[in-house]
Image 1: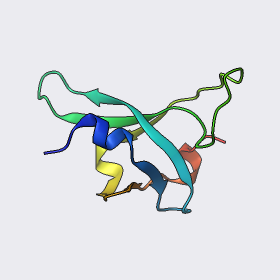
Image 2: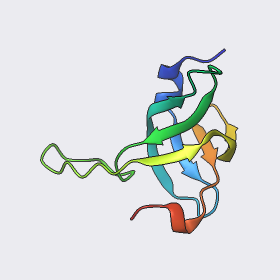
Image 3: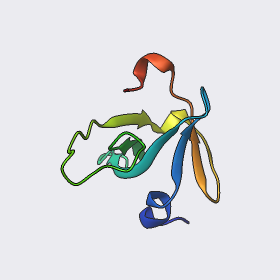
Image 4: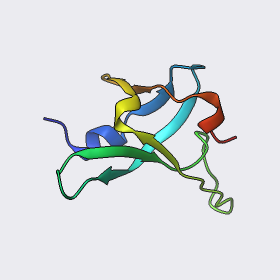
Length: 84
């Protein structure tokens, strides 16, 4: 079993291009089934300043998670769905 706080401490990396997307900020949970439908990432993967509040969400469907490792969560997100 894994806690949400364990997931939040892991970097999320896209296997398509090796870029760090950020850290988990929220989960999308299906209330009917109790299963996680998606993970949500805020920010740009860089340190965000206090005054720069550009927080664009990236929603990654649970099926796009390739592997949850000790330090990282590997995901597969095609280029057109990424924000820059």
